[in-house]
Image (cartoon, rainbow, N blue to C red):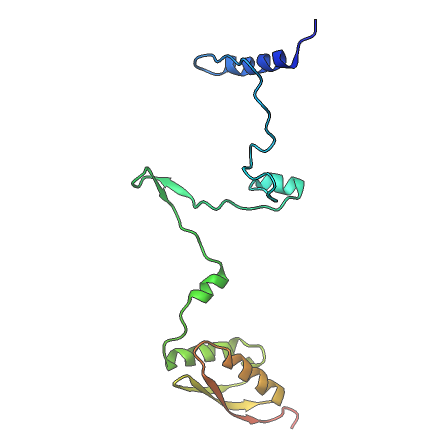
Length: 169
């Protein structure tokens, strides 16, 4: 005599119930098998399961809930908040407040730039107007340095008082 799928299901479920401590539960009918139980939006691309994303080549979407700890008013509190990317943090930073801050940022930028770092400059700032003094090797380098400095926050304009002294002379 062959058993039906429903009887096989009841037997499999009973094996789990036998191993589980506590009162035994009877399974009268087979539970409907829903393919999209894991995702409330089955048409959504990607997964929050990192192992599945790697094995199946699906896009990975990390969890959006912050980590939590026990405690707080409702028995739970946020352990850390949501972080910002470096771009978001940079956009949230206020522009330099005064001429001294602008001068410090101009000097730091000139020291970190591959072209400008080979030269020595004196920087003056008044009301956001930056004055550059020093010796530069070519017009292209002057244009590059002026472009870099003029893009800094708080800089109104750049006054070029550099001296052109080609390196081959």
